[in-house]
Length: 134
Picture 1 (cartoon, helix red, strand yellow):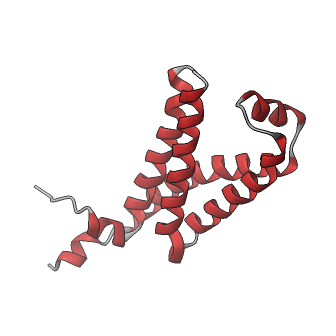
Picture 2 (cartoon, rainbow, N blue to C red):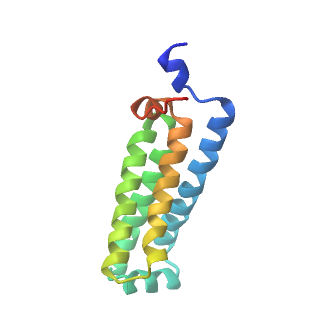
């Protein structure tokens, strides 16, 4: 059996990968939309985090754009990299504000889910990080 055939995920693995992909994508999409529509509670949280309300619309557009790139199979790797950068910024904000550990770790967990989902459904990523079967 060829190396490429070993890296091709089965149908059930791809389904699990898509489920794991949709969890972080949904969370980030909702966060982006909330920044775009700007409900009062989200504006208050943004200001509390040290940002001006004027950054919300551009941030929301960027977030939704990254999620869309992450969900399109042809651009999924680029989207995953951009989502990871976004989540790294979220970790930085929580650390800078002295937030409790669960708030700091939430973006990390979302990022791990995003990459795990991508790994399970995307043969190109599996080729970069092969797992040898015993």
